[in-house]
Image (cartoon, rainbow, N blue to C red; front, side, top):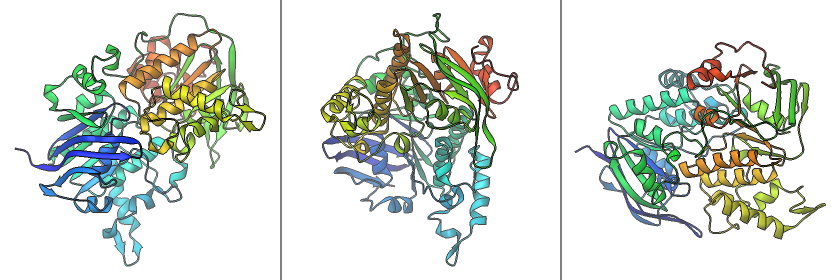
Length: 512
C-alpha cells in the first residue's frame, strides 16, 4: 500500500457562530495528487489550514507519517515537510518578489545577511521548470493578482516540501500556466511527494487527480480514486442531490445559454473610450490607444495574457483610473468587481452590512445626503445574502469569516445592485463553485436582457467563460484592443490572438 504522509480524522473547527468543519477526513498518500472539492463554504480552505498548521482543530486526530501530532503553527508543519500555498496571499507588499521568496530560507544566509544571488539562481531554475515567471526586482504591492499567485506557488515549491497543499492555485492563472502547473504537480507526485489540490472546476480535477475527496457542509461525503468517479457523481456529492443543470459539469458556463452571441439588438451606447492611453510608472503605454463603445444590454468580453492591458481597461471604464491620453466617457451608475476582492472590494473586519454600505454610501437607496440609513443598508445586505446564496449565519458576520467563494458572491451581488448603467467585472466567477458560477453567469445574462439593463464589460482569464457569455469578444495584446472575428471565436482562434497572432496589429473597430 502507498505510504500515508498525513491523515486527518473527524476534524472539527468553528469560527464563532460558523461551523466550518464537522467531522472531516482527509488521507494524503505519497505519489498521489489528491483533489479536494466542495461548494463555497464547505470547509476546504479550513481543512487545508489545519493540514498546514495555520489552524488548530477543535476536535479530531491528526497524524503525519503515522505519528500523532499537535502542530504549534505553520513553522512546525514546514519542519515536518508540509507546505501550503494559500488562497489569500501571504506576501509582504512592501518587499520585492525576490525578498519575499527569500523569507524564512535560513540555509541561504551568510552571517546576518541573505545570499540573494543563490536564491535568485534557484528561483530562475524553478521558473524554467514550471513556466511560472515572476519579476524578481518588482515590489509585490504593484503586482497583479495573477503574478502574486505565481509568487505564492514558487515560494512554497522553493522549500521542496514532501507534501504540498495548494488552495485554489489556478483561480488567477492563465490557461497555459495551469497546464504547466498541473504538469509540475504530476512530476512531484511521480517523485514520491504528496499533493493536495483544492479546486472548483471539475474538468481540471478529473484531468490531474489520482484521488478525490468531496466536502459538504464541513463533512467528508466522498473519498474515492479518480477512476471510480465521474463529473456527475462529483457534482451530486457536492450539492447533495441532482445537479441543477448539466452545464455545471465541466467548464463553467451559464445554463440554458448557447455558446456565442445571442441574436438580439443592442441598446444605446452607455460608455465610450476614444484613443485612450494609460502609462505605467516607467512611461510605457500599458493601454495603447484603445477605442471601445459599450452598449446597454450587451456583454463585451475581453481576454488576454496577464499584464496585456485588460486591468487598465477595466479601471478606466470603472472610473477608477484617469487616462493619460484620449477620452473616456463613463456613466454614473457603475458597478465594479475587481480582480482582488480582499484588497480592493472588502474590509475584512467590517460585517456584511458595512461592506454593502461601503460601496453604496452615495446611493439614494441607503443614503440621504451625508446620512447613512442603516436599516436600508441592512435590507440591501440581506437581499444580496439571500439572492446570491452567501453562506453566513447572518449579515452581522465579519467578511473575513466568510470563505473566499462567499466573499466573491457578496462582492458580485453588491456591485450588481450598483450597476444601473454599466458593470465592469474582472473574473467575476473567481473562487466560485460550479453552482455559484452557473448562477452568476445566468445573472449576467439576465440583467443585460432586462429592459434598460446595463452593459457589461467582462474581463476573464477563462476562455470558456468569455466565449460562452460575450456578445462581442476582444483580446488585449501588448496594450492593444483587438476584436475577435466571428469566424475565429474558438479557443484556438482566441489563443492565437492573445499571443499576438493574426489581427493583433490591426486597428480595432469600437463598434464591430
